Length: 134
Image (cartoon, rainbow, N blue to C red; front, side, top):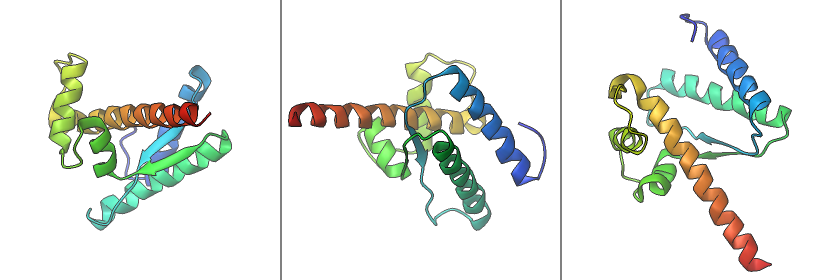
């Protein structure tokens, strides 16, 4: 990630990396963490801009996108919406036997893994419902 205060440059960098993933993998659905007003206003602005950028990229690639609140994806990943970031960090490093992650540095990465697992669970549940309805 470039070291800059330019929010546009940061988002551009992120979307360039995501475009590489689109060229390498068959991305069929996107799930983003939805933002809520409990954060400080500067953080809220930054995070909502990123979600907006992902709404754009999903539309560009004609891929379904959903947003989910932290308590909702944590309920799917942990079985409880009351789980905290540290709980997600601990679960991910245990699941993948990661030894060199540090909570304060890598907690956003482990949250992303938790959100991805939640999307997989949501798709499985949706397919089960579709299969039982057929």
